[in-house]
Length: 346
Image (tube, rainbow, N blue to C red; front, side, top):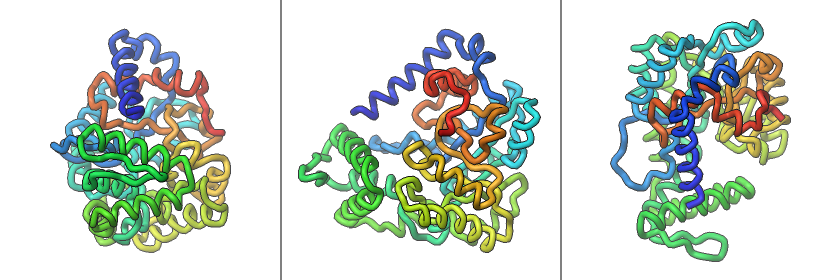
């Protein structure tokens, strides 16, 4: 329920910005030089009522609206490779497009839109997913809650029969498990997934691009391939040696398998509890030109000194309207989120 309230408040805030035209009169004062937009799934709207991860997917039509609006507002759509130089120069408004995890629907539904707009983009690949292995634990959690009528958690049982019960069970389990060790989260979700008699490998292989598909895609004009670790861990919760391997080795594996340099990195989950100063240092040591977080915000010229800790703007599937897009591109929502700070890199 808390999650639902939070998203309603976000929606209300975006609507208020549009309703007061704050994106027009306040935007010029707080807008960054550019924005790195973050996407996950791009696919047609689904009919299921229980979709707790819906914030991570948009429709192809909304992607088209996003790119159309970006151009109308005078932004150049640039490859991530150009971002450091543009920040160093401090000139020209720009947007860069990033897609996390390596989902097949990015090719099936996003690519035709990107081609139509002539838009460069970066696809961040998790190597375990390309292997057809790995843990999409947030989707496993969704499927387990969908299938089960009750969820055992912390010595109690969460009912999961009706839609409100399933939404509550997912939100409670997600919040409690993410707050603790990642090993507990993964083990607990795996038990529920197995209890529901679901196929973990089928989930990954059904949703994620394999190496052959990535190899064919790598010839696509305007595409850069980035690294998103080996196994998609919350890096800050792991020992330094493990985090270093996840960050550095994933780029080397992708480069070796696909024959292309890997210059960019995305931190899984990417919030301050998953990626901080240590991870930024490890990404720099691994030789990446940029690394992106999920910390919300625009990029400013001062980010030229923090290229391994770049913020992004999530194009949220719960708010697929032009008004929401205008608000996000104005930078106004991040004025409060970041307490007036342009840089949030600590």
